[in-house]
Amino acid sequence: MSDRPDRPDPSGSVPKGETHSAQSRRITQAEAAEAEAERTLNRTDADALDETMTMAESDARREVPRLRDDAVRPRKSRKLPPQDRVRPMLSSNMKKEYSRTKRQWERGLPKTRRRALNDMLRDQDALEGGNRALRGVHGTRSSLPTNVRERISNVDRTIQDYERINQREHVVYAALRAPTDHGNSRNALLEHLRSMSDNPESEPLTFDGYVPATHSLGNIANERDVVLEMRTKSGAYVGTSDTTPNADHIVNRGRSFQVVGVHEVAYTNPDGTEGTRTVVQVDDVTDDGRTSATT
Image 1 (tube, rainbow, N blue to C red):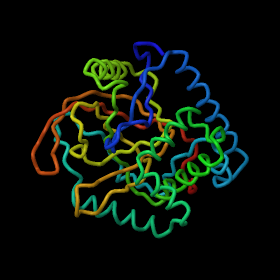
Image 2: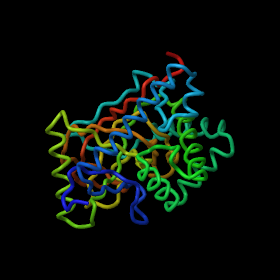
Image 3: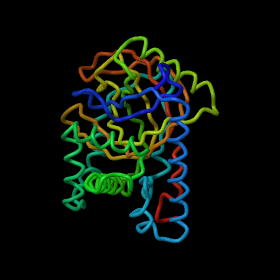
């Protein structure tokens, strides 16, 4: 690989304890082109499936899961917050609403799907292993070993089950770790993201794996890392109700995000104190094709 990141490539391999993080790595232009070519082929194949099959039939054969926004209400759409707004902890009322949706989702889950997601969320090694496998095949599910493919398929469908009943668009936070744990590497990553925000024609960041995130910026522990402020309808709330600060969210795999801004912002910690850190605002621009069975 080159010594300089021609493009930051997000992966899922992160150190122990970094529960809201994804890792970036250095890739060459040739590697980026190869990855994008395979992702484009997967999108083309998905479009072809949709022309001849029902959504359920198509989803069973797609390489990358589509977003399901059947229940999303326009009045619950979100905007990325302006730079001067303090990023609060997720409110008690919002946590209760998300928890109600979560309980409804869990009640309807088949045991195999619920177990697949729980196993991945509870075992960071399992999450990282799945993400490494997905990154190695640029999200192409059929290229995975059989046992990994089955586990990934169950997690995909479990997250989609949540999306089908979710009414909200989300703003969530995830740390994007630099290729190496060094100030120069973090600065280079941030400058590259800043240059992407200045260029509307820049390619989006694509996550071939799942993104562990949180609704509360104050839950991001490592203050040295770059933080992505992500607007998306994707994923499932896996945090608690209003009894603890836990506001975790898992963003489904295969999402592409356009970098739209880099800002220094204030945020609230779980103990009520305030801090500041740099966030990179990104907008979900994934081409999912059809996303609702009602259209």
